[in-house]
Amino acid sequence: MLDSGRFLLWIDALSSATIVTSIWADYTDRAELQTVVAMPKFAANLSFLFTDVPFPERFGRAAAAGFKGVEYLFPYEHAVSDIADWLRANDLEQVLFNFAAGDWAGGERGLACLPHRQDEFAESVEQALGYAMVLDCERVHCLGGLRPPGVGEAELEATYIANLQFAADRFATIGATVTIEPINSRIDMPGYWLDDVARGFRLLEAVDRSNVKLQYDIYHAQIIAGDLARTLEANIKRIGHIQIADNPGRHEPGTGEINYPFLFGLLDRLGYDGWVGCEYKPLTTTEAGLGWLPR
Image 1: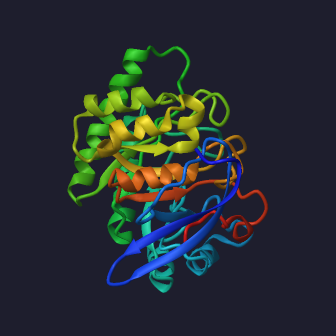
Image 2: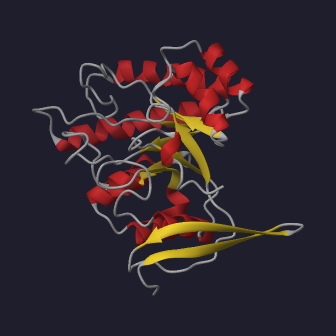
C-alpha cells in the first residue's frame, strides 16, 4: 500500500515500440500502484458535457478534446440526417442514446414498466430503431420508468419483461443491443422503478435475450450498493455499457470517493472492450475538468 500523496504511475503500452507515459494522480491511503496496458474507450455524453454551446457544436468540441465517441439522452429533436452529418464531420462514433421516455419535461422517466402504455412504448422502439440504423449505433438504452401508484409489483415486472423482449427482438434485426440501467432513487431519480443493481441482473435472466445487457453506471451503483469491483468482476460479460461520474456531486472522476484509476485498470484486466460514457456534471468547465482523462 502506498503512502498518501502524489505518485508517478507508469503505463507501458506494448506495440511495435514501447511507449512510456507518466501520469500524475492524487491518491489516498487506499491506492495501489498498478501497471495498465491500455485504457477503456471514453465517450463524451453531450447532454452533460460542453453544454455552454448549442447541441450541434458539442460534436466538434468533443472531438477537439480527444473523444472518439459520443452519447446523449435523446436525439429526437434533431433530424437524424443532421446528426449523421455532425458525427461524420468530426469522425465520431455514435455510442448510445435512449428510447423516448414519455413526457420527460413533465417528469416522466421511461415507459417500460408502465401497464397500458405498451403501444406508446412500441412506438418509441420503432423510432429509436430508425435512428440507430442511420447513425450506426450499436446500443440503445431503455429507461424503465417511475413506479406508478396503485399498481402491483408483479404487474410492473411482467410489463417490463414483455416490453424488453419486444425491444430486444426488434433491435436484434440490426444486430444491436438494448441496455437497462439501475438508477438510484435515493438522490437523483426518486420513484425510479429499476433502482437496484442486483435486480437488474436478475431481470436480464428473466428477459432471456442475448442482446439485452446491463448498463452499469458506476456513480449510480456506488450510491445503490457500492461493492463496485466485485460486481464488475462477477458480471463483466453481462455488462454492455459503462458510465462514470464521481460521488458525491456527480462531477468528473477525481472529485469524490470513487477510485477510478483502480477501476479503469480493473476493466482492462477483465477484458472489457466496450465504451465508457462520461455522464457527469463538470465542476467548472468541461475542458478544465478533463485532467483525469488518460491520453
